[in-house]
Figure (tube, rainbow, N blue to C red):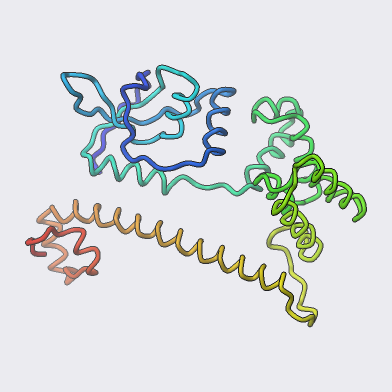
Length: 298
């Protein structure tokens, strides 16, 4: 791609920016972004490209940073730090797609272990809480679970499936205390319905398979298959199918990117001549359809 960058950070009115490649984001995730920016500030400028405005009005396409822009709008900010790029609309779309693909999704345990890294670096609980915008009590509880190697409980806490107090009780107490903690959570309306069932299943899974999600599993004990085990198997298979669909979408996007990149290369006559000379002038049908317009010949 021939995108050019201007590394200068400039402040652009949020009302002059339109999202180039909008995507949906959950309310919970959006609020996390907004609160983090409100307390800690913006860590990375957005990326914009100048677009043609009406009657000489200056307008910009937002290439990267939709969540940050929406958070600024939500917080009532009038300007946002940005860097400017130049390129064709096709190149800008590809840049937006590439950023989404390249954004690594950290697991809950990886993110929580960053808290331990700061603790090992000598930061106090209060300093870690201030830097991460988390409650001091939460930090103490997380470090306690980390010290015990409770990865399974940590994931449940981070995903909001289990209150931290209940997770600590599970890690440090006997069955009677755990049941009492579940009862207290139910009475406080922290765990109800499916959430309570999920918490009980988590306790049983931890007891059977250990503290870590990928820990050693027990061998089958020869007991007959129950309705609960069948339901669990069905849920696992459903999750596996969802992962396959997600991977298929990612691969489709990568194929589109590859097609666009090859389309640029095939505009070079020298490159095409070299391919033919080497006997590499055939393409899969999907890529050929992306590269050549109707009526064109390879």
